[in-house]
Structure formats: C-alpha cells, structure tokens
Image (tube, rainbow, N blue to C red; front, side, top):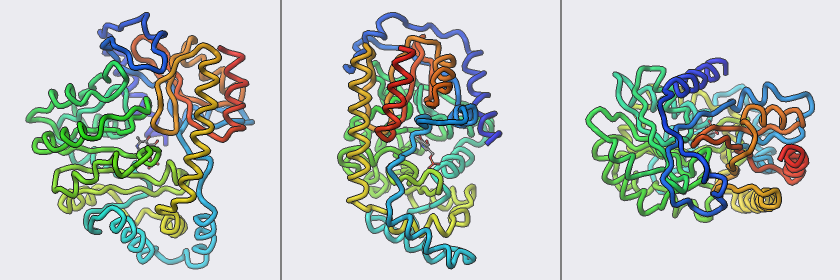
Amino acid sequence: MANSINRRNWIKTSAFMAGSVTFFSGALNKLSAMPMKVKNVFTSTDLVTDEQVILQAPGVMKARLSANENPFGPSPAAKKAMTEAMETCYQYPFMKTRELMGKIAEFEGVKQNNILMDAGSSPLLHAAAMFYGKNGAEIITGDPSYNDLASSAANLGSKIIKVPLTADYKLDLDAMEAKVGPNTGLVYICNPNNPTATVVDTAKLKAFCERVSKKAVVFVDEAYIDYMPDPQASSVMSSVKAGQNIIVARTFSKLYGFAGLRCGYIIALPDTVKNLSGYATGMMSLAATTVAAAAVAYQEKEFLQDALKKTMASKEFLYALLKKEGYTYIPSSANFVMFPINMEGSKFSQEMNNRGVSIRTWKFNNKDWCRVSIGRMDEMQAFADAFKQLS
Ligand SMILES: Cc1ncc(COP(=O)(O)O)c(C=O)c1O
C-alpha cells in the first residue's frame, strides 16, 4: 500500500512540476449535464488517493464513497459459497479456479488459454505495465484516467503520454491514435473511464482497436462495463476474438461487490496471456474462498440486476441533490459521478471526511472536482447532509 501511495505521489509531484500548462477557466461552471462545445486542456492531478482518504477518515465513517466499491454485494449465494469453501481451504483451489475459468470462457466465447486470472485486475495492469513498458517504451493514456498502469510503467522508466479528454470528458481516441508511434508499447483505454464515468462510442472504439492494435497492444480496462445497459454490446471482447492484439481487463470488484475478495482477469490472445503470465502470480494469488464465491456469482443475473437497480436509484438521488444545490455534473455510465466543486479540493475532502463522508478530489481545467462513488441510500443521505453544509 505504501508503495502505491508513493507511486501515485510521484506522479502527482511530476504533474505539478510540469507546470507550464495553460488552463482554460470560466465556462466550466456552466458545464451542466450537457457536453461542452469548448475544447479543454486538462492535465489532471488527483489530490488524495483512495487509500489516503480512507486512512485519514475519522473514527465514525458514515459513507465510504471514495473507492467505487459496491455496497450491495457480494450476493448471498457468493457468501454461502465462501463459508462452505472454508472446510477445504487448506487445499490450493486449482480445480475451482479451472471451473471459474471455464464459466468465463463459455460466457465470453473464448478458450481458457485466452484467460489470465489474478487477485483483482490490479496485478494484471501491473503485469502489462512491466511487459509493455520496459526499455523506456511509451504508454499512451487519457488525462484524467485511471492511473495505476501508467504510474507502474513510469516507475520502470516508461514515458507516459497523457492525452487530454474531449470537451465532453470522453477519451479522445483520435488524439490518442495520433500519438501512436514506433516507441509505443501500450495504449491504455479505460472504458467507462475512471474518474469521469464517461464512455466512448463502441463502434468507434472497435475501429480504433482494429487500426491501433496493428502498431501496439491496446489495453481496454472494462472494470465498470457491468454498469452499462448491455455490457456485452459495449465491450471490445469481440476484437480479441477477431484475433486483434487487444487485452480486455475485467474485475469482480465493482458490480459483483468483490473488492475485498480480490478477483479479476484479462482476456487476450494466447501469446499475450503467456507473456503476461511471466509477470503476474496468476491463479496462485487467488484465495479458495474468493474462487468459490466467484464461481457461483459469475453472471448471477438476478443479483446483478438488483445491484444495478439500487445503484441507479442512489445515482438519481445524487443527481437531484446536485441540481437542487446548483451544481452541474458529468452524466455517469458507472457507479460514480464527477462534478466541479466551489471549494479547494483538499479542503473539501477534509471537510467531508470530518463529517464522516469519504470522497475523492481531482484538479483539472483549473477547477477542483469531486468524484463521489454511488453507495446505499443511507450513505447518499449522509453525503447530502454533509454536502449541504459546505455547498
Ligand atoms: C478502472 C479501474 N481498473 C482497475 C481497478 C482495479 O480493480 P481491482 O484490482 O480491484 O480489480 C480499478 C479500481 O478501482 C479501476 O477503477
């Protein structure tokens, strides 16, 4: 954890030191829930990490809304499977892991040698950073976007090329493609994007993957894809199946509610899986309890639908609150919402923390932003109570 904080702080410091960026100001408060027409310059800085927010939280945490977790999970069936797995948890879970991989392979229409599993998707992001970022290769990513892969690669000496989002806060695929060159090791696409919760057009992304994957591997992080109305239709899994050099990353940490259990996977071409397995501990990292739970929870439609419904209700509550308080927000395709705040970000975070509510803040476009995860209704109410005192 300390390493992770240091790594992110390193990025933060270097972003501040870059210093020479011209920010656009003004019009941002008029953002509303509509796309902006003005081209922005972003260069983002995340002010406080998930870990720091939670470590600094006061004794009584009323609403933990800083790490995009799903408080509606795991499902009762998953919990039961975990308890039952305790009986045999002195054994390595090889059989159960194979069973789980079989289910994933069948659902996605791929072979087991297309799948690499690990304790969450984070170790797989790091494996990709190590394999594709070595020898000073360039990693292209959005700005702001999920920073874990890029910051790991930066630690290994990779050059990180951060491409500002479009005016409507989506990954700028055209600008990212324009940056691909002979030294590009990997292009990281987070879709839906964290922290903005925006998605890119699927057809456009598929066309991007087809072209760009001929020059460099495209890593599509679909951690939040389960929050889309039709996850399979929004995914680029078909690009892997078409034989393209794409890595699709998925996690059980979000809609399945497994963040504390640790289970994730990538789907890619067999050679890619072989290459990355040299940099990840793979199934040896997976706990027997987690694997047993994941095997029953995978594609448990009723539970997933219920969690989605509750998430949507809490999100609507948040949207209504923000509108009522005179705030704008970026329409969200995930379990978190980003909106510009009027207070300096670190201060806002601290003040919310003091009121028992953890959130995350960023700076970009010369503005401070809050990213609030969608929680249970009692947590959203706690957020509302604290927020109203500060807004
Ligand atoms: C976009 C994205 N990818 C990957 C992860 C890592 O998730 P995990 O390691 O829990 O699978 C996160 C966590 O928040 C995330 O937001």
